[in-house]
Length: 114
Length: 109
Image 1 (spheres, each protein chain N blue to C red):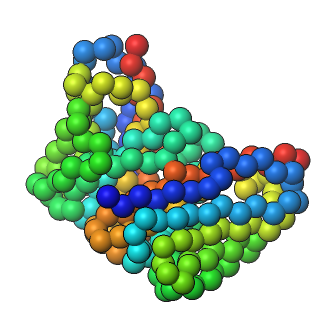
Image 2 (image 1 turned 90 degrees about the vertical axis):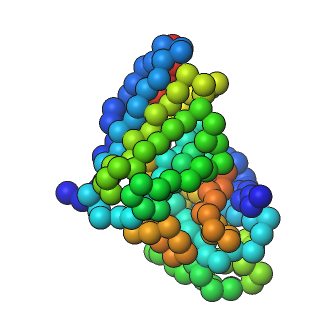
């Protein structure tokens, strides 16, 4: 099946630890995104990538890092510098980054800091 | 920066009642998209509006894009329990797609 796969679905992290969330897509999309969703809140853009080996900061990039070494993969690292990392993280992709492109979301990863 | 607000934040209706959520942007939009997120799920694309004053229908759902391309609405006629979820608008301004704050809809049978 074509789509976006995120893993793990649930993750617990101790304070001070870095953690990496995986995102893989087989839709052959150029653009990929990471969003953060807090309970009862909207979606906030963390990072996005329009093409391999290139990525841009979104609205809340502090404490996060990404890489885009392959077209199909866009992992997100939540570093210990992120003050309040407990949230629902959504990876997404679109054919390209621009007007008129539908965004397809993965099923999300729940991160809890304990 | 560009901001997209939605009202209401939350609405609880009885099955069969109508529901409307409104989306307002601080800047003119090139297009607007609507997504639905079921409880515990991920957002799923519903529709895109591009033209000023555009109205589109999907069964019981009616989507409208304002004349000034700064606001939009989603109206559900005769809600059903399957309509439960959070509805997000997403407006595209100069470059980025900005998601609204969402309206959470609860439908009681």
